[in-house]
Length: 158
Image (tube, rainbow, N blue to C red; front, top):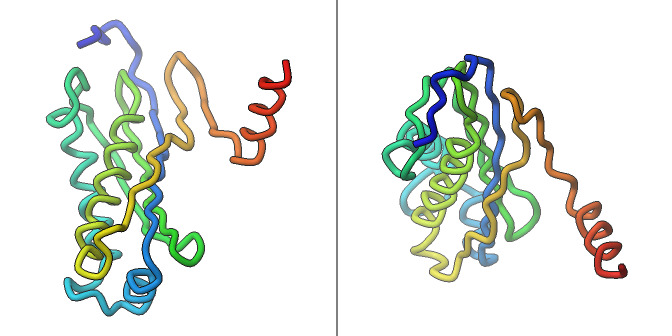
């Protein structure tokens, strides 16, 4: 592990998102609350929160952190596309990006588990860091997808 003992304790925050693609039948069952396993929103939220708290046991070389807040939300982005967004906060010497990304990923896995009886082809299509703040490296905010595509086209044109 990286030695962080000389680093200052500061407020650290990170937000991550996982996106899940579902069939029309799974999308409808999730939206209508008719999944066989029950209500997905609370299950996904609790799975994500629990995962954030276990990140140091799951990811080698991650520091165990004193998390002060973890929250997660399941939301319908558009028909057939759902997102799990996780926010993590800590007062510590190192960032909480891995905790936020682990929370979003495990929340998405819990969603897959909830819908698999209806849709075995459901797919977790991305897990990304949306934003982070605190610490020496400063703040980060992911540019919107359209801005990233424009930047990629500009880079390809050079």
